[in-house]
Length: 140
Length: 114
Ligand SMILES: Nc1ncnc2c1ncn2[C@@H]1O[C@H](COP(=O)(O)OP(=O)(O)OP(=O)(O)O)[C@@H](O)[C@H]1O
Ligand SMILES: [Mg+2]
Image (tube, rainbow over all chains, first blue to last red; front, top):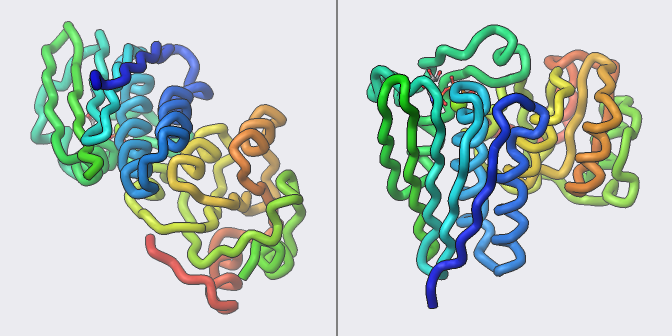
């Protein structure tokens, strides 16, 4: 059976809606019947990546492929790119502006969280062109 | 304890979620940084926070948290309450400050994790 594919457009100008796609996929996975631990790991990784698209890259597109063995997600944006990936991966490193911090983000924990909760994380980024995160979470 | 107990212990007012007040909760987390909450995974927990934007509800939903307590008497906008209703999350507000609210719950047996 081919994986089920879901795509979501993430608007870059509306922070209040950031996380809507993650909420939708979460409810879909629940309906399909994945176990709670898998759903939680997907939810956290996806939510962090979705928020990053909104606060750092002016939105983008998410594609999720769901099969019984794994959930595979691509986050594609046309933002500024990440100049130094190993620095960005460090806990506590953040370039988020003060207005984002006052909303509860910008702790520099998003990328480390994504890494922690996923089985595979690949980051493909080019300055001035954009960033793609490829995340795999095994379901077995 | 139940969310109803949390409400009493914190002298809190219910904003929404009356039908869920008898839900059992075992752990709590006090945070104003949502990524700190997301770094902590436990079932059936309560989130205490000084923030009132919609991301607080979305974060709690991602973590399967059942109850959010807004400290220092803060009240979120209607759209935040609507989101909580849709996600089956109880919203409470307490006049207490963060430290005092967490302390009272800890004293009554709720435990942390972040
Ligand atoms: N999609 C992206 N495009 C451009 N830069 C990014 C992107 N995602 C992350 N970054 C950069 O990497 C840094 C670290 O990201 P990370 O998610 O770990 O922390 P944060 O978003 O700043 O804070 P938090 O996730 O705790 O709210 C960001 O501050 C930003 O500079
Ligand atoms: Mg982030």
